[in-house]
Length: 300
Ligand SMILES: Cc1cc2nc3c(=O)[nH]c(=O)nc-3n(C[C@H](O)[C@H](O)[C@H](O)COP(=O)(O)OP(=O)(O)OC[C@H]3O[C@@H](n4cnc5c(N)ncnc54)[C@H](O)[C@@H]3O)c2cc1C
Image (cartoon, rainbow, N blue to C red):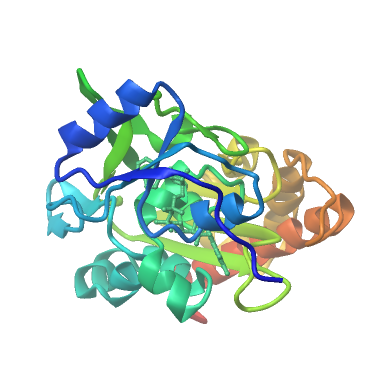
C-alpha cells in the first residue's frame, strides 16, 4: 500500500539562526528534517503529524568533517552516514565510527540519513550512539539565545526524547582525541542486514603497561536509551591484559554484568530475553576482539 504524507507547510531556512527562530515561533508544532529517512516514515504512518516542516539541508556549513590532533574530530550535523563511512580521516583516527556508519541501513539510507538526525531522533537503537558514547563525544546545540555543548551521555532522555529544547537543533558532534593506544569496536545484531539493531554494543579499551587502564562499554537497543555500562567497565579497569585475554572468565563476567543493566523490551525484532542473550554475546565478543588487538593477537 502506498502511504501518503499528511498535510504540512514547508520552510527552508538558510541559516541556523533562522531555523531556530522558526522552531521557537511554532512552539513545538514544527519539526526539522535533514535526510527525512526517519521523519517521513513516521509521518506516513501518522506516528508524527507536524504541521510545519523545516528543511535544514540547505543550511551551509553543517556538513564538515575536520580533525585536529589536539581538539579532536568535528562532524557537522548534516554529514551523512555515507560521508562518514567514506572519510579518510575518520577511517584512520576513529574507525569505530566508520564501522557504525557502514552498518546503518542501506546504501540509499546512508546517502540521505545524517548523523544529526540519527542522534536527534533519540532512538534506543541509533547506530552512532554506542560508538560516540565510548568515545566521550559531545553534541553541539544551537538555540535562539545560546549555543551549548551536551555530553552525549546526557543527550538521550528516553525513546524519541533528547535533551534538545524546543528551539534547539544539533549543529555538530565533537569527539575528543582518544587516549593513546585506545582500541574500539562496534558490533550490531539485526534481523537482516538493512534492519535497525536488535541489540548493539561498542567497547573501548586502553592499555596501561600490561593492565587495562581504561574500559568503556556502551549498549544500544536494550534500554529506553543507549547507555554506558558503568559497573561492567569497572570490573575491567586495572586487570592484567594478558590474563583477561587468556582466561575468558573475566570477559564473561563483565558481559553478564552489562546484561544485568539492560531493560529490553519485546517487539517485532526480538523478545526481551533474546535481546539479553544477544547483548551478552556482543559484549563478550567485542571485548575479546579489542583485547586481541591490545595483545597483538588480533582478529580485526
Ligand atoms: C529502511 C531504513 C533503514 C534504517 N536503518 C537504520 C539503521 O540501521 N540504523 C539506524 O540508526 N537508523 C536507521 N534508520 C533510521 C534513519 O535512517 C537514521 O536514524 C538516520 O540517520 C536519520 O537521519 P535523517 O537525517 O534522515 O533524519 P530525519 O528523518 O531528517 O530526522 C529525524 C529526527 O531528527 C530531527 N532532526 C534531524 N536533524 C536534526 C538536527 N540537526 N537537529 C535537531 N533535530 C534534527 C528531526 O526533526 C526528526 O525528529 C533506517 C531508516 C530506514 C527508513
